[in-house]
Image (cartoon, rainbow, N blue to C red; front, side):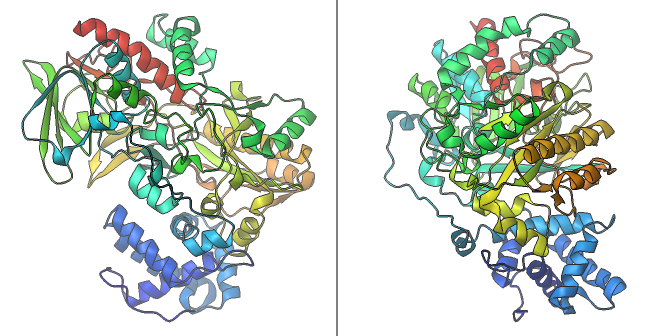
Length: 635
């Protein structure tokens, strides 16, 4: 073990430091391809924790101390004093322990997150950062202003739009096209392609906002926090919702406004503007042939994913930002188009209050990172911050909740991963992350899509530690990796309030969600075996690799619970429920809030989830429709 030095400015005791470092070294012991974790990994992990929230550092210190002590019960000595073989044995045992598997998974995730993003580790696996220089300076940049630099005093406009993602970017552009004076207010900054260098830790620090659910299995929720919102850091996947989802909305709301026929013009308008088309095989890579071969053998449907990325060369990891400007997120499409029509974009401005006068919304008040307060007055206020930030702000101000539904009805599209070892090279890091899949089981609430990681993400995606992790990562160029998404059985989550800068979110997985995810892994296994794979990696905590049909038969019979999976969510929806009855909904079918005239919500919070597919295109189409309604009310 490396020599131990005190960690400066961190509330960790020497014993906590030793235990935390020993865990890092055991979780990532190194291999022929991957350097082992060391003090640099550990100290960087603590720095990332402190940057995310200072209260997490002492919490992790207590976890290190507890796990060090837990080893005494198993091995008679603290974990930090055991040899490598005994530590590996304990890690395998703890990954299936009902009490210790959760803290071990969290600690492992942190170490893998920072370790595989270290330059020397990333390079040793074959990755290289791509720094873009001397980017173009389009004319619309003159319409972008940081909140810290604007003059004191109020601004006035026709419409102020809070947020620039799939909802805000689209509705703002559509209103600007109609001749309305629009001001966008965005908490994040405008990051252009010279900022998208591929570093995962830096990308999450600068471009993402996050949350964790509290419930029967913790789940991280990832959202964008920059101009373009999540559209600037996603895979560009553009699905229309299934027709049966739109039919369900119409039945629940009691109108035909969202029927497939009624919504078709809005979907078509967005698809034309974004140049949505199926990804070519050249950027998808060999995983397309792998999926097609397996699906054909099973008699299943398969397809190239439609994306808003014309001219994509497949050379960057989309979730850290597009380095070539090929993917047409709202930061490159709708927002610049609006600015070209005279709209204004204010960045680095966190909106914390809707101005309400005589019962009507008349603008917003925002604060910059340096504490400067800015007011924007408008005929209409559109909140488009997303399904967590929007209800949090309204709840904090105490408006918009006469129905008691504000923050409720949260759906998340619970997701996890899966991998299969192919005979042929897959080289996922050299191609787009999400380009091919099968919707054979979409009616059953299951969607299976490629989810190819870059090298600095490869260690993070596996719920393994120690030598089992090293084995999987060493084979990464031959692994076909997938994202498995299930439709929530119930939209029962809730956003409560902000706690020390973090959203308080509760969500419990339904037994049917767990059954669907187990079924999704079984289907993925069947497809992979039919494609020629021999070894399978279901992303079940502590689960050994599954070998061949016999191994799959055993996996099929296992009884799995919510805490057995490593869940993630990128699709929070539904927390400002849309409906015609003010007693049971937050906004009406025009996106106007029942309680506050002049205030509209146009983001994922008004989508009656779950829809069962990536919701980007749905939010954009609804925002296109919402612009018509807002324009009619302020003309």
